[in-house]
Amino acid sequence: MKKKIVFDLDGVLRDIDNYLVDKYNVPYPTEWDWKYKGKDFWWYANKDNDMLVINSKPTEYLDTIKKYCKSLEIWTCQPERWRKNIKKWVYNNLGSNIKLFFLSTKEKRIRLDKETDTVLVEDNPNFTSYERILLIDRPYNKKVKTKNRIRNPKQLAKVLKEFK
Image (cartoon, rainbow, N blue to C red; front, top):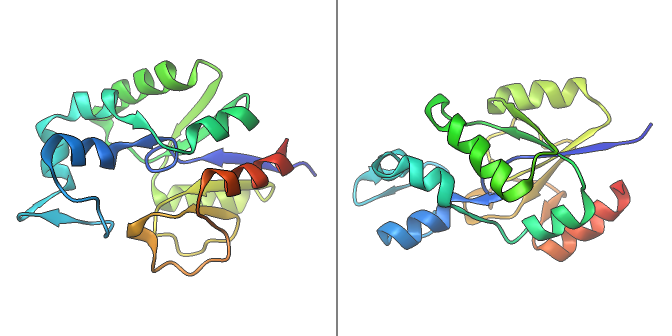
């Protein structure tokens, strides 16, 4: 049975965190639910959510992913009000050969458990199990215990070659 690889969006393909660091001079998050000066991610994001969603740059992993994956399937958890702009970002940065699914963390895990041939590349530290999840290493997910941690694009490239 051939395995399929799917990707999360933020933290894997798109870099929202550095957009906020650059725009608002907040420190890079070391916790998933971070606060800076008493204000959380959503406070900063809502100040400029259209531009945040559209203008966030790709992550350091995107070129590697595009090199090995000619069509992408994305499983992302996004607020309803962002989805129109998410589609713009995806089209502008990834092209039109994309399958895009809006799923909560719980829905991702359920789908992954049903699709036993699928592997998810993810950065979220809130899964109940990391079986068949390749975790992109970020400061906010350091506490997750997994042997499937991806620390750099070169390491991801090695894994993606197996799926080619």
